[in-house]
Image (tube, rainbow, N blue to C red; front, side):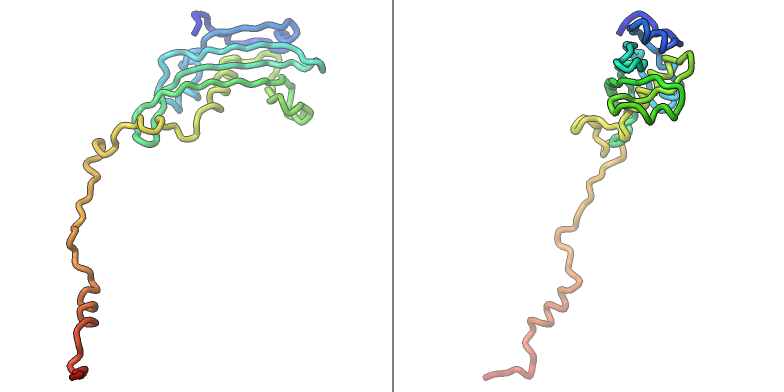
Length: 179
């Protein structure tokens, strides 16, 4: 992580024309939507943005974001730390209609003159969140201690309800004397 904060806003089309690359940190408190769905984050997100123009003069922003977040494990319901790393290439477009003409390698970024870089970083992290956060297998706390002993005692010598029927079938009948 760096000691430099990522700028809040930028004119991405101008940055792409100049080939500007910037990196910096974004605090979790600057990302309210992400903050609402995670249990916490000690370190800020570290983001790198590289702006450039492709052969067709489209404005491209390569975004790399890295952050460690605390989420609630859905197996044991305790906090688990997950390292999120994202990387994407975004093409800056003016409106939704322009997104239909983009090559498959680019994701659209609908933006006006000025773009909110903190919201861009936040969106990348939200998209990288797992649908069901969990510890790795074997790392969860013992759930039985958290919710009581889950062991169930089984009666080994429980009599079968059909035992009496079986006894009737094995009894010799009184009229079957062969002798």
